Amino acid sequence: MKQKCILVFMVILTIGMTACSSDSKEDSALTETIAERETENEDLSETETNATESPKSEITEDVGKESATDEENIEGDPITGIVENYADNIIIIKDSSDEMLYYFSTKNAQIAEGDSPIAVGDKVEITYQGLLGDEKNPGEAVKIVAVIVK
Image (cartoon, rainbow, N blue to C red; front, side, top):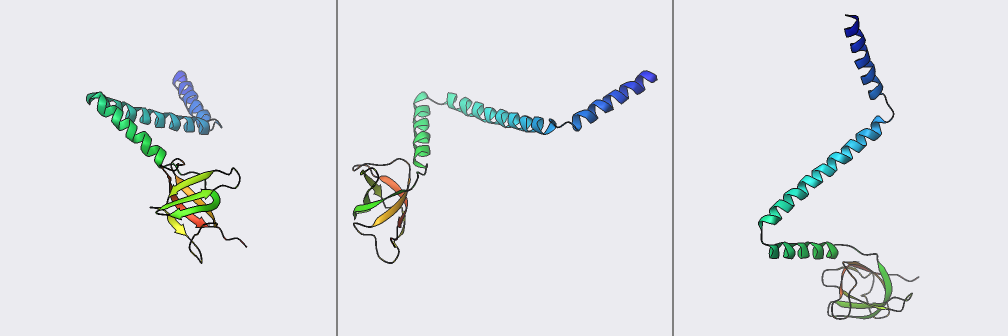
């Protein structure tokens, strides 16, 4: 009987010490992180299983499409520059800090012109999506704002 009471007391004491421990928050966060990683690994395993069932050519095409889509959806830092040319859904700006020309497509861009339309010589700030483009393949502008000079 004494042994059972001592055993019950020790179990209760151990549970109480574990529950009131200051490390329990860190342990629970660690447990949650491990659970999330296991879930992600299971999702990846399912994806790999599905991918192994299809031909290799389809796998490489899908991977290429996903990486291109990811690159295109990345929004870059805004660029401020002087408009060199603005015609046919293409705007060319010159950055005064590095004297480089940047080419952007304005086809799907949100344009905030202010009181007057954007013209050559105006200072603009362009937020773009994906990679910076060149003359043949301009980058995709998301937002163009005319900078008001006071």
